[in-house]
Amino acid sequence: MWNVERITTYQQITAQSAKAFAVDWEEWHSGRKERLIAPHGWLSLRSIDWLQEGVDKSTEGFPGTFRQEGNNVIYTPEPGKNVWLRIAAPGMRSSKALWPMH
Image 1 (cartoon, rainbow, N blue to C red):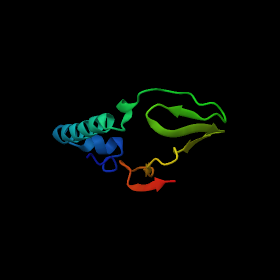
Image 2 (image 1 turned 30 degrees about the vertical axis):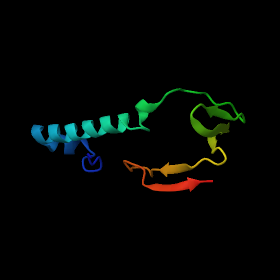
Image 3 (image 1 turned 90 degrees about the horizontal axis):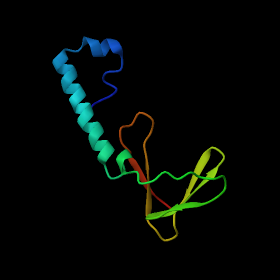
Image 4 (image 1 turned 180 degrees about the horizontal axis):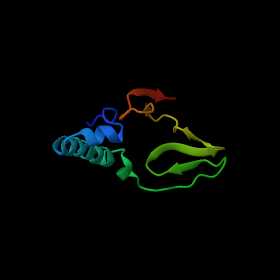
């Protein structure tokens, strides 16, 4: 996967040879495509549902409900369902920490 931290400035990009840039770009592009088409990537979105303040909203096929409270979205898992929380810290390319939600 392309290391986005490796090249961060215009000067670093323009200092690369055209061949090195093309290789880096192709690596980034193929990784981006894989992330988009992943089972939980952006292209897996199946609907856009607006939340209303304090009103629970469920989505067919997804265990639990979502609710807006101010600027926060609260997710409540369905009782008896195994749901795992995946988190990614800022700057991480993928989620690393997993733990069950109860």
